[in-house]
Figure 1 (cartoon, helix red, strand yellow):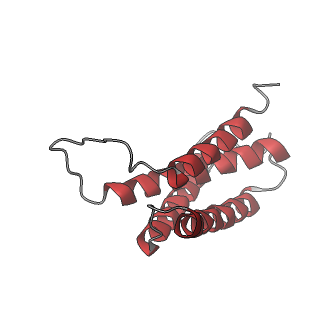
Figure 2 (cartoon, rainbow, N blue to C red; figure 1 turned 90 degrees about the vertical axis):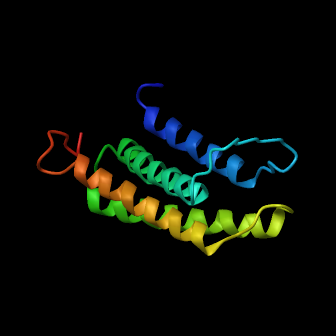
Length: 135
């Protein structure tokens, strides 16, 4: 059973991680970064979170439908939900948290990350690679 649903469990776990990290307050923690200062680290993090969201989301939907949904439809569905989820998280940060900020730049980074994850899936299941979409 676990092996049969591994991508679905991984995807749901990733969504929980994104939600927790996006809505949890880190202001009470003393997070000393020392001299390490990476420009736009926040945006890079958003990009990577949603790249993984889209990539694993596609694999999860493929797993759930046994590939019968089709690659194109799966990509569109996952891309739509990744962008919608990113916007929802930003709205929740604005409305229910006291020390987190909603930023258009975060939505843009989320969206670009989702597109990158979709592009990666397209590459993995392209005609140049041996993996096939349908089981």
